[in-house]
Length: 126
Ligand SMILES: N[C@@H](CCC(=O)N[C@@H](CS)C(=O)NCC(=O)O)C(=O)O
Image 1 (cartoon, rainbow, N blue to C red):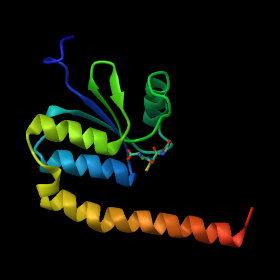
Image 2 (tube, protein in one colour):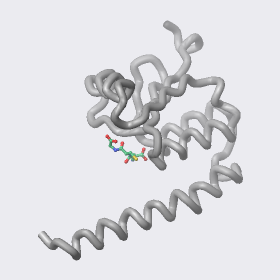
Image 3 (cartoon, rainbow, N blue to C red):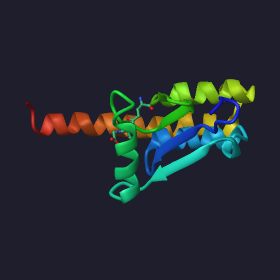
Image 4 (spheres, rainbow, N blue to C red):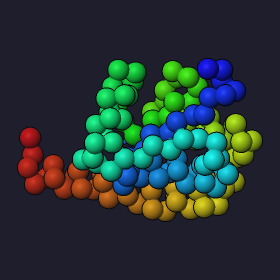
C-alpha cells in the first residue's frame, strides 16, 4: 500500500482525556473524514482486539495511538496532533475550541488527578 492510498488509523479509549483531545483537534481541523477512528469502551472485546493488535508494535500500549503511515505508530497525543496539524496546514494554538478544552477541562482533570494521587499518598504513606 502506498502512503497516498493509506488512511491513518487513530485508536481511542472512551473516557480518556488525551483521546478526547486528539478527537476534538481532528474535528475542529476538519480532519475526521481523513482518518479511521477506532474507539473502544474499556472491558469490551474491541479493547482486547485493539490491545492485541498494538501490543507487538509499540513499546507500551497507551491511548491515543495512531498509525500515521503504514507500520508507523505513535502514542503521544501531542505528536499525533502535530502530525495532523501539519497535514491540514493549521495551527493548533489558533483553534479556539481545542484551546478551550486544553486550558479548561483537560488542565483541571490533570490537576484533580495529581491532587488525588497526593491525597492517597498522604492517607497511606509507603
Ligand atoms: N503521554 C500520553 C498519555 C496518554 C495516557 O496516559 N493515556 C492513558 C489513558 S487516559 C492510558 O493509555 N493508560 C494506559 C491504558 O489505558 O492502558 C499522551 O499524551 O498521549
